[in-house]
Length: 320
Picture 1 (cartoon, helix red, strand yellow):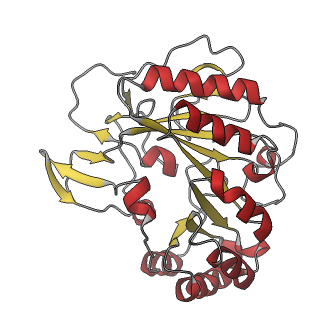
Picture 2 (cartoon, helix red, strand yellow):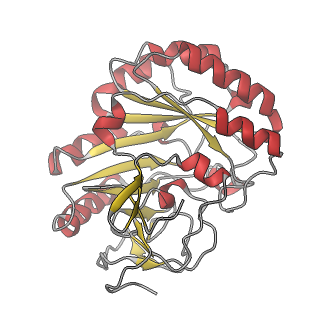
Picture 3 (cartoon, one colour):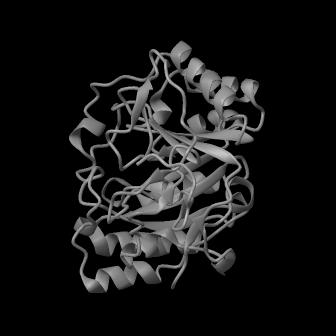
């Protein structure tokens, strides 16, 4: 399909924050340093200053911020309740979202639900009992917004498909469900070596959407000359079809999204542009540029980066 703009209509900045390398799982497709436990969680005082800076500098172009905490495993951060309350005190529209393996107990989730807006449960099939996982989160479906994001692990692919359909048939209607094709390792854009049959199988997996879509996000759309030509882009299928090439386009990373890595470095782009580091959370002696970046890559493999406005014929200032 021909288009010249991929957009998300975001009235918020998405803060993709890798808060530590402490994790209670050991998935082989994660890089070792993402779960080796060597990098601890940020100091809560520092984290609060980051929130203040984002609120101040993005207030001219965004209404609020979505703090997407990942790791590692964010639910083992002791200061998580205090952090959540603080982001709400700065701006009551701010949202806290966790990318989690969902391993904590039902009691923990019930106690934590009041200060978490949304969770994305990354389903790691080899380490998960899908029946118990579905049962647990079905009991939370009226207390918190939940997505099930299935990691389509090539090493246990048939089991992943079987578990996916179990979830599809048994999850509460309020819970979203979708598949995620995996990269060989998380810091690489290349997908696992799926067979053509496996790729087609993933493409045909049915998704489930719920009320959280209406509240937390609008779908990606494709436009041509200002007219919508695709009203709901499926990012996973876009990646599988190898349509994730926007070389030379203007990308709104740094405006729609910013990234903070586990070392505290604030950068533009989650999976790309390792050189575009603005500074560190421990000093905060920098400003966000708030202009798009000209894409220099032939493949975009990071879902956070893909879920960002991109324009082909943009003529304004850009970071080159």
